[in-house]
Image (cartoon, rainbow, N blue to C red; front, side, top):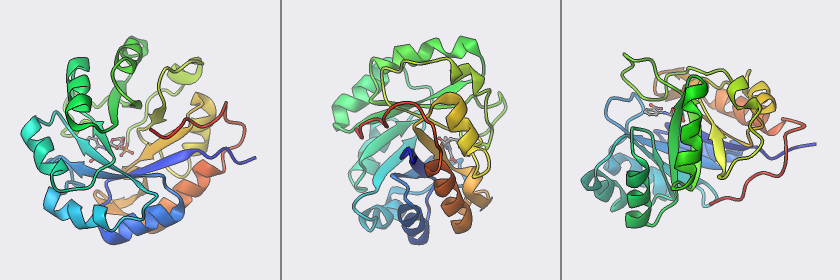
Length: 227
Ligand SMILES: O=C(O)c1ccccc1N[C@@H]1O[C@H](COP(=O)(O)O)[C@@H](O)[C@H]1O
């Protein structure tokens, strides 16, 4: 039985990337607006990609501790459907961004151990979706997109989620099915696991990833509603 696990391919940088992700069956496409990332796009570069994306693709802008000036700049140019806040944004800031821009907000939360789990309930009060990612190493240049996974057992016992959520961190075509089975994730996000080099998406890996995720059997419950 197919379980319709929803896939986000993050770090799309060319029209071909967008096309391949959509044709493979990804539901979300992510554009990274973070200059330290090898996947960084300017708003000017992202605009034609977003404008030409197939209508069904939910276009996600990933930002890291962005101020209103940067968000105004991006959202004034690029047709975006959802914001992914991947920095140290407080619950108040998440609520503020959501209110100010009228877009659904997905808050990324880094997880390394049990002490990181209470933030899930805290941010469930203010975000439309949560993205559960590996906590980056202390000296990492990037807060995500590092190809690192965390102990999926930490989520295995959690039966009740107040918000739709995505699993991220070190996912690949080879491990995504096991990650979904272990955690019960119904949505997954990948960046470096579908690349041939940092920032260079690999069409074959994107297709393999989406096929592997959508082929997961025995996942729990219905997929969440799209926000
Ligand atoms: O992809 C990036 O370059 C990036 C930069 C800054 C913050 C987050 C970033 N990516 C997100 O990180 C996770 C995990 O990525 P990976 O699959 O382990 O490479 C994912 O949510 C990306 O959206």
